[in-house]
Length: 455
Ligand SMILES: [Cu+2]
Image 1: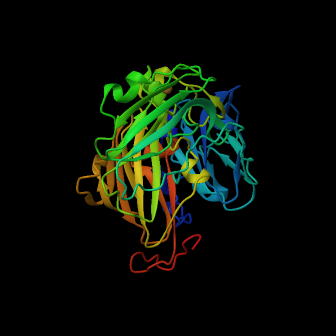
Image 2: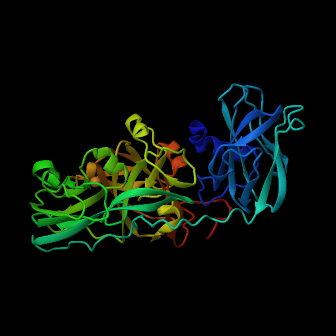
Image 3: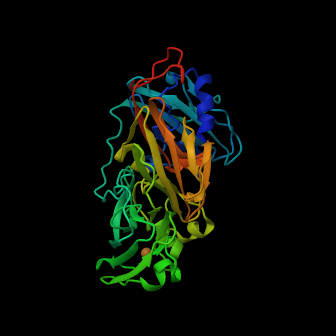
């Protein structure tokens, strides 16, 4: 099942024109709704069985979708006979698959309300039971979880340092464990700095004396600590900040070198503390400060290893085995799959210069950071801020515990998608939107009369 949920959307995108579907010019790499079905023999009948989210285990489940949604149906062959899935009402069908464990996909836009059918077109199979309903309408109400909103806003960044001299700076960080929203209808018990993922963006100047007070909440079960990559000293601070629940541990360091640095909890098992959300970044600005820009964003990538399959609703739990195998079920920007697509809105105007502070908490996956439809004018590779930037870069590689600073002008309106170009990860939750508003210059991009949604 995992395989299918990771089906590259390229396949889906390639399918759309062939199916004669209206392509959304507001770049839409994501299906709005995804279902997974598995073929099976049950009580002598041929059936589809739900293998995702709230259709899990249901026989010939009704696929409830909102009107206008881009729908993706993954089909796994579970019995080794020849099968497919078709929905004539939407002029869509999958390839036929026959090998047990093989898989395929059907995609369509639910552009009309009502009740329709999906079925298997192999002769006799529909009559033998392979049929279910597609209901287009209100769709299932979004399950509002009462878990905390743990995603940090990418706009949550302190003011630039400017032209001041070195001084003393003090930060209070609080290690807090709490149930947080991971995806629609899905929560996870995160471990955080200050209740959000990533932790707060710390901003200091080269030469500052920085004091870190790490308080571990009384309600915590675990010891927590902090290792900042900007620190020169034992464990980056971890050696002296192992704080038991209810305790506060402090230390002071001099910010010797300018740069953008990852910090994270460094209490064994360190990878466990990081995956659960204990990472953030500290910017050490060089003398004179960074050049002024119109917008700054703070984005971090991480992955989660849940015992349950991707898409399962309810409270998910950690799987040590999956973490050691480095097989995540979720990838997220800023802590949740919704953070940069629904919860927080990143915006800029045409002609603005945007700066993204991008880092990878991980703990394991390297990001091929890319913004679909944009080119980075400047990349400060590995966040080496005092070096000359690379210019005109499509994608930049950022490993775990590493960061980059990218800058680009937003020249044309539309919705631009932040991704890790290892795009299977988008299927597991990794995407962010940058909305650019303003006048369209046809010289830069001419849609040949096609309408651009929202503009
Ligand atoms: Cu920790």
